[in-house]
Image 1: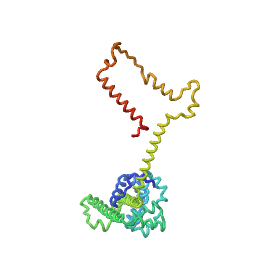
Image 2: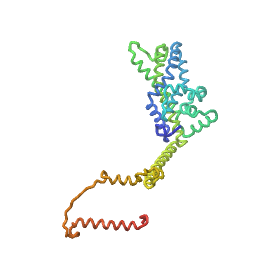
Image 3: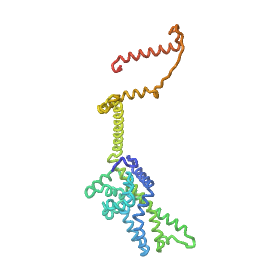
Image 4: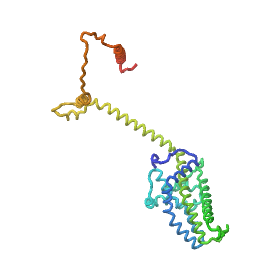
Length: 343
């Protein structure tokens, strides 16, 4: 895990601030993560919903609900790679499904299925891929005080799924013409196959939103807990400081090299000189600077009286300027007498 490549600022946050960061993960990759969810769940849910409608039973839908930890694995794999600059394509997720789908899955589908910490603990099994006592110790450390609020997150998303599903069903039934005269008992009792399909589709549409959001928030809580325990923000700060110092050293070294190169004459350059000209590089530079292109020659004609005294020919301003510059030269001479100009 290369922390420098993280597209989000890794800093210690409160649990709810970390959950809010997870909502931003979902908003940023909403289109891609929804396609991942549809790729892995649309066909299985359609088959199970068809079985439920044919048999007029909710058990196939219960099986899909029980397999939620399995459906959440590709979502977490996508988030964990996208945060650090690697966006997995659907083809790549299908190829790597063994690496992220199997670790810790048996426990999540059996005795740990009803754990309210599912979204948080799944990161340990899937991302760190630890097993046995190592996984137990790791979970004990990450779930230590202060609480990461993963259980509250599960309870919140569970109620959100129920209310959104019931609200969507109520909206659809409100759009039905009044001639059908549907009673409240018709919504929940004596359901026909059509009513079961409609309620099942409403539930799946809600899951297309809540499941990617739930996984993103659990992943953000996991990152926040590790940031608190391992000081990821300090590691990033120290690494940035080291890079800035290294860049400063490189700049200083380059400046020193540029300052020393004109005063050194390499032996290879002396041996490579042409015997006909015998000019050094410094002489060529001097001649180039003394050429008319850089130092153009100007001719000026000025007429003066021959017998006029020089002191009288100077104007008042010329005398003042000469006085000032003469004193300035004297001060420079005094300061230059001091070794290295050190006072």
